[in-house]
Image (cartoon, rainbow, N blue to C red):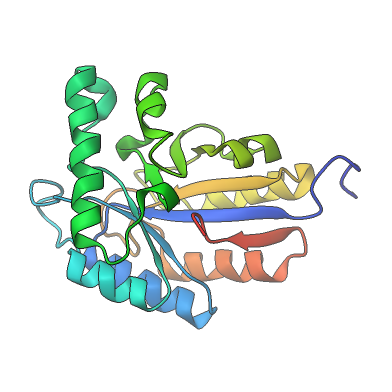
Length: 224
């Protein structure tokens, strides 16, 4: 079935890997390098009290991965669900997050950053504070993006867990191939069973092979 004339000829497919588990992030970066693609990581500035059973990355690692061509985006100062906090406290978390990234991530420029809400939970008031300060925000939604939404920097995404998301992701790619939205954004987490919603590394490899080989898709390094 050919796309309708008003559809984009290719859908930009973005994958963002949340939370910054060390082992998973290194494995993910290595796999993307096999495809000569940059991976995109959304990480927490202060992760010490989050996911205590797992080793998280630190800014030394994020700077090293960034130097290899990967993208590192802010995911929160802590992993607090900001929509559960009083507004002023939520804004304080946003301020601390951007300040920590400015101090610790080499070359960080908030105006070029994509703020990826923890739990994908933002709201209009927080977006109103963030949007003059960052390039784009990411929160929950269908993951299917119009060109207007891409241009506006109001990006929603889909995710899946706690099990392996490969089946859900491939089903959504099938839909994107039929409908040809301008963009499609999906949040992933760890690989090979590490933490919530981890995808098998072999399943991730097949997803990347599909994205780079199918003429319906174009890989989107989110934030570049």
